[in-house]
Length: 283
Length: 282
Image 1 (cartoon, each protein chain N blue to C red):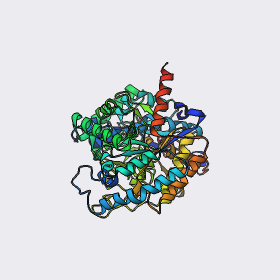
Image 2: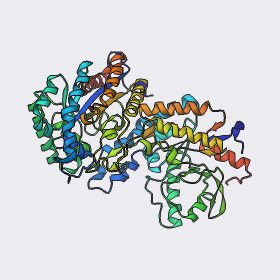
Image 3: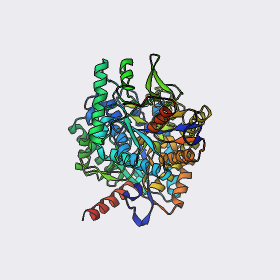
Image 4: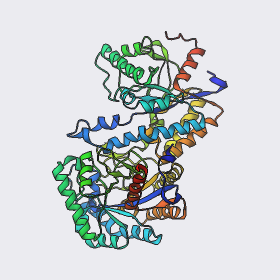
């Protein structure tokens, strides 16, 4: 399809604002693990320093992004979320505390997602319309999510390369897939490191900064070549260090100077797709 | 936003701290934190010895040739083994900080055990080096806020162990000054390699030193742009190796030639921060 302003492809910068949740989850089962301060300090950087720095860069380049935020982070750091919303970025679903368990039945899973939505409404004043899950959900939950649940799009890892209607068990839903190929575009995976516990397991070397950067460029070129859309899984706790912010800024420059690309939030991309593909509006 | 968060002295744009972790064979505890490996034989012992024997002199020369004063976080057990070396580091004008005694995983010790071992380590390092020890860097592993309270009670004035910021800050809970670190500025995880036992466990190939230097240059560019603390961590067996020492030399050349950079030891940075804090709260 032809995207807004005649662009060949669409791109939505996506940030997973996980904060300390992912670090706490790695150690909470260890004796005394709740009191460990080193691992979680890596996550705290994302909320405290990474996010404001990235917001400044986005501002400078006039880019709007989607922030996938665990509901617990929304509850605990409403000011950080307000700073994101005040700049017209989008916030979207990313679990409650980033743990993978959404519940065992469809009813439990729907209740869990609604609980996250309640936190969004209470602390940020808006519900999420986009879904980047932190764990698997049942097909029936997914059907609900993308119809009565009110979610307009999903941007989950390994959901293919096509920007098109999300299907559940062969049945078309009312929501759109915004592809996220995280092995190409997850900066956490490329450059995170911690020794206790090992992250990543086996302690691979962190990448030369130009490697993930060149992957981002290659991925955007692929998105343009096939005329689709995409969103990366960047992490403020990784992308926001002084050196990584230099790389991120370079990427922003590449995006805004690329005439083949329309950049906006995942929600804007999804709504544009729906509008131009005869979709039904969510009630 | 970031640029206004701290004012560096003399109108400087950012700060650089060069720190060296003196661990000898105890580096292996970063990869086998729960013990049950033999540090005293085989490749681990050999690599530790290589660092102390071949790596450290090159690092000291690279620093001295450029008049750079660094902060050496030393394990007291290494000071026991190599007292003359630790004395020499201090004599050459570098700061001696504490990195624990036997590279303990502090979070797994009781408060009393932590207090004893850290006091013992501090006393031993002061005795061997003849200089006062004010800086603390947690051995890789974990710690708790209680660890920092103990560290403060023992008379340390700052910690350089955590990654939740990129400028010095005061921890509200323990009232310790923290000079944050970042793993991308630590040479060991890029370079260390042994076959048996496996370090790193996934047998990932040792990094290209040019790539590491490039990452560091980008971080330095970022520190200058955002006005932060560039806190380099070195292990002599990694960057002190003959085919890698050039990356430290090239990086130091960039740093000492740049008038916008305040190059200081941990102690100097903590002391500046302490004074600035008092002025701000007046």
